[in-house]
Image 1 (cartoon, rainbow, N blue to C red):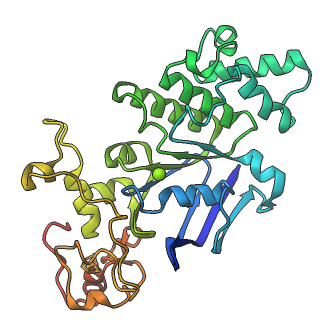
Image 2 (cartoon, protein in one colour; image 1 turned 180 degrees about the horizontal axis):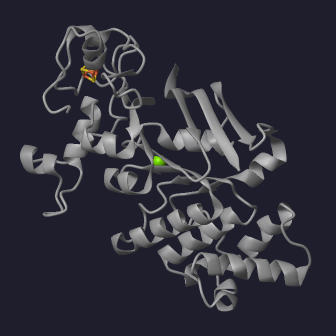
Length: 338
Ligand code: SF4
Ligand code: MG
C-alpha cells in the first residue's frame, strides 16, 4: 500500500521570446494526497496546469518548490528506483506512448525485467500474457505478437495500462486517459481502470476536463484554474453544489445528456469557456479568474485568502473572496450555492 503526498507544489517555466524573458507559473501551491483504493480527479481546461502536476509526479519535470512523497504502509519513504516501480503513468495518447517497432509483448516484458518482476523467457512471456488478460486483451498469446498499428486506439490504451501495472504499480497517474479515444469505448476503458484499482487497491489520480466522468470515477475532485486549485471536495458535492464561479461555469458548459450540446453554448450561442491559457493574469496576485468572473468585486484584485468553506462544510472549499466574506458572515452566498 502506497500513499502519495503532494505538498505545496510549484512549477515555473521560463518563456523566452526575442530578448524578453518571462517566468510563467504553471502550477501554484497545489497539495493533495492519493491513498490506496481511492481516486482523486484533477479537473480543468487545457493549460490549467494539471498535466504539469502529472509530469512532476512522474519525475519528468522537477518541481520549482514543494514536495512529492511516496510513503509505504509503515510510513517509510519510497525513493529512487522503488518510486519508479510504484508510481506509473498512463498518458493521453496511447499511440505516442508505444513504440511502433516493438510488439505488445516487448512493451510488457521490458518493465517486468527492469523491475525484477519476472525472470527467464518463459516466466516473462507468461507474466506478459497474464497482464493482457487482466486488461481484457484476449487471446493474450495472439495479442502479444502484434505491433501498435495492428491494434485499435482502445486496445492500445489497454496495453498502456497493462504496461503501467507491469512493474507492480501502487499509484497510477492517468492523464486524460480516454480523451483521444472514440466516445463509444471511453467508458469501457474507465471501467477497466476502476476494476484494476479495486483489485489492486491502487491510488489513482484521474486527470480530465470531463466533469461527468470525474464525478462517476472519483472520490474527491480538485478543480484547477491557471495553476491553482480553486475548489476541492467530495466528488458529488463539487458537481452538485459547485461553489467557485469557475466550477459553475465548467458545470454549465458540460454537455447536456439530452441534446449533447453544452448548456452554456445553448444560452450564449458560443462554445465552452475559453482556454485558461488565453492571457496570463496580471502579476498582482489577485484572483486569476476575475477577468471572466460574473461575481468579480473590487476586493478580488487582492490576494484571495486560502481555501475557505461554508459552515458545516469543512471538506468542500473554494479559493474565492465570496466565501471568505461568507465565512465572516459579511456577505450572503451567491444564489444557487445550496
Ligand atoms: Fe470571482 Fe472574486 Fe471569487 Fe475570483 S475571488 S472567483 S473574481 S468572486
Ligand atoms: Mg493535458
